[in-house]
Image (cartoon, rainbow, N blue to C red):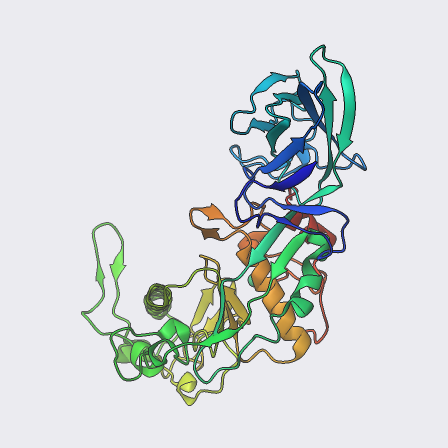
Length: 431
Ligand SMILES: [Zn+2]
């Protein structure tokens, strides 16, 4: 029996060893992926082949235990609707049994072939069993495959670094990253080199990127953070208020007034809109997918910086106006608007950025592995890289150091592994 990939370049089957598993690995990021199974029979009496399979430890994921979004179902065991066998070329499937686990294909010129569609859950394993039958339906030979194991794969086309920022090549190596993902049956393919980005894309603060500035290529914080002053506040008939952001002399004497908080809120929203727009522009201009990018800083508001601009106070003299962003409260007048420090960030489309202020070998690899785990359900080419449930709110686990998908995995100075629960989710089980 030869077993090979349905794809001509045979990329979908890897020989064993990478995860220290026996037998062949079937890459099932796309649950519709099928492997081609061919059987050569140099026996005149061979007429048809009945295909079936075994689950070596009877531990494959039950349909009800695994990820299921109503359209895509990763688990197959005990699913009466699961379909495992598909016709290949002119090797007609002549029969299928009631629970869909077996199929019979005909033999032409001493050869038959069929497509096998296993589950999409990492770690599920199969032995394919082919019963060769004569024209009377009697089994004349039984052939079994080696153990086939379902895995999923994450690979980055490219690794980049902004000009003047460290390369992550060494940190993102297979040796450093694969170990996090072994138990999740995920194969990590490390990029082979790191490419330096051109000047215009190499800004200090990615989310302050200004595509129209030919010189600095980025917005200066003191400019974008300056309060605007359109018109006096107007209360519209629907109750909404159009605010200026600049404080009046009267307001400066009463820093806790509602109107100041409203202005601070309006200021915050304007800056968040700009941050989003800058990030989108950078993403569009760089035109990457599936890449890890080493960058300097994300945004001046996101902590861990000593830029003197950060102490610019747009709401003097009021330093006590609370602003809450993503659950973190800060004060409009306290200089740097420190929200949650960010160590790395998944920008969707498979793009992950890692920030330079993260240091220490273990913390850097923790952050890379954490961001890669976020990336696994990014959409690339219209489909998630891997189907899986979210770890929790914001795609994080609400734990402290108990699992790598906690929100701040950059502060331990030692390797943090995925928790049992996180491993289950990465394999394709339900949360
Ligand atoms: Zn995260």
